[in-house]
Image (tube, rainbow, N blue to C red; front, side, top):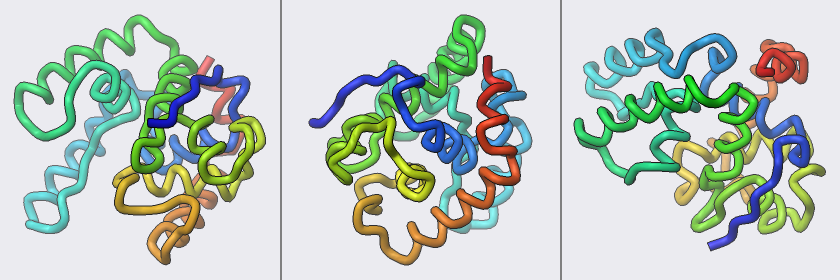
Length: 178
């Protein structure tokens, strides 16, 4: 398992922006739960299509740090509890820092530094906008999709993520997190 912690200041600003654009565009303004996203996911899933999640980055941090994978009401309840605690105790800056350090970006590759080293033989501080978007694009299923050798889905999603970053305001968005 590859893993190497980096402070947010030592990770390219493109990566947290790409992750926010891909997974939780209301990250700066919600208190751990995005009720509109949850409602959309419930409606989408009720139509019998591919299962879609409505978890925020804060919820993902709670799950990745303290809980197990899988779907159960018990895990979701504990995830909600931990999410409330995380949001009360950590600033958004810390939450996104933890997320990009514990997220799985490939089979057994956890965190920005391990991903940057494994895929592009560089430090996480040197990730480009395109590489960051590709990393964010694989987050729904990092063992199925590849950031290093992206297929058509990851390429399309990465392009969409880069457009979303521009709409969110790029680096100015990150400054809202402090």
